[in-house]
Length: 71
Image (tube, rainbow, N blue to C red; front, side, top):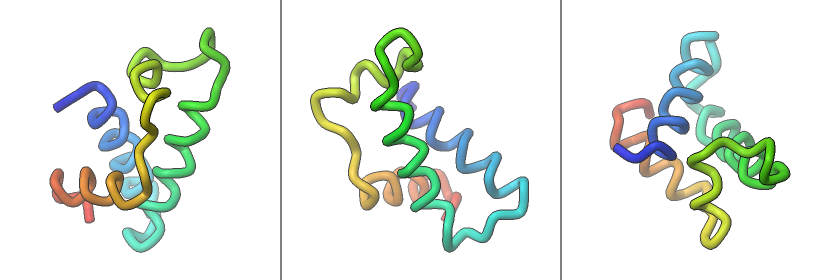
């Protein structure tokens, strides 16, 4: 699992543990992911620097979450 996927899965797990409905997790994770990638380079997490060339779509994030049995 890549660092990016770990970050996505960990964020989704946190949302689910806090009681968020699975229905809204994908959209919330995608919005969070977009915010992380668009931060200034100095504030961006290490895994986000690789994403600047091709950011993930909501559908791809949903596939990652399904792959790890979160949806």
